[in-house]
Amino acid sequence: MKLQEELMKYKILIEDELKKVIPQKNVPQKILLESMEYSLLSGGKRLRPILLLKSCELFDGDIEDAIPFAVAMEMIHTYSLIHDDLPAMDDDDYRRGNLTNHKIYGEGMSILAGDSLLNYAYEIMLKVLIEKKEQLKYIDAMNVIAKAAGFNGMIGGQVVDIDSENKEINSETLDFIHLNKTAALIEASLVAGAIIGEGDSKEIQLLKDYGRLVGISFQIRDDILDIIGDKEKLGKDIGSDVDNDKSTYVSIHGMDKALNDLKNYKNQAIRIMKKFDKDRSEFFIELSDYLMSRTN
Image (cartoon, rainbow, N blue to C red; front, side):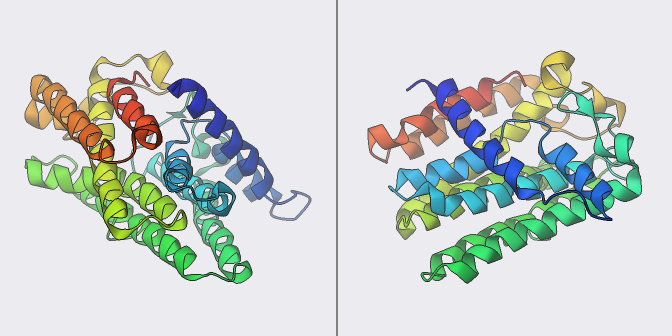
C-alpha cells in the first residue's frame, strides 16, 4: 500500500465534504461563518476523520454512512484548536502556517466560532439519526464522540493541562493530560467508525486499544518536535512549551526515554493490528510507523 496516496485520497474526500457544510454567507452573522470556515478549511492532516472512515471500511462498512460523523469529528477538533490558541489558553499566533483565528477575527469572534463549530457538529450527527431507520449504531457512535469531546475526555485533559501550568507535575498527571486532551478524540474516531461499520465488541476493543497507543504516541511526538522540529514544516513556532515552562513528556522523562517509549508504543500498536486480516490492517500498520516518525 502507498500510504501517502491513501492519506491524500481520503484527505481530499474529507475536505470536499467540509467545503459543503458551512451555510451561505449572505446573512447578518456572515462574519461568524467566515471565521468558522477560516479555521475549518485551513489545512491539517485530517487524521481523525480519516481514521473514522478507515475504521468503518475495515469492517466493510459503507463510508457514506460515516462521512457525516467524520465531518463532525473534524469540526470538533477544529473548535478545540481555535480555543486552544486563544490568549487565555496557549496564546499562539500561528496554526498550520497561518495566523490563528483570533489574530484575524478577534478573541470574541473566535470563541463564538469555536462554539458554533461544536454545536454544528452535533447538528450534523443528529440529522443522521433523524433520517436513518437503523438508529442504534449511529446513536452509539455519536455517544462515543460526545464523551471523548467532553469533561471526561478532551476538555478534562485541557483543564488539567491549564491547572498544571508553572507547576512540577508527575508522570501520572501528564499521562492523564495526554490520554484525554489528545488521545481521546483519536480513539473515539476509530471506535465510532468501527461501530458504524458494525465491527463486533472484541474488534472494537482492539481498535480502542490501538487508538489509545496512537494517541499517546502522537502527543509524545509533538513534544519531541517542539524541541527538535522545523518551524517551516510544523507551521508554528517551536520551543513554546519550554518558553511557557510547560511540562512535557520530554521534560519529565528525557529525550532518550521519549524516543524509546515512542518506539515501544508503535510496536504495540502494530501487534494489535496484526490480529486483523493482513490486507485490511495494512493501512493502520503503515500509519503507526508514519505517525511516530513524522516531522510535522
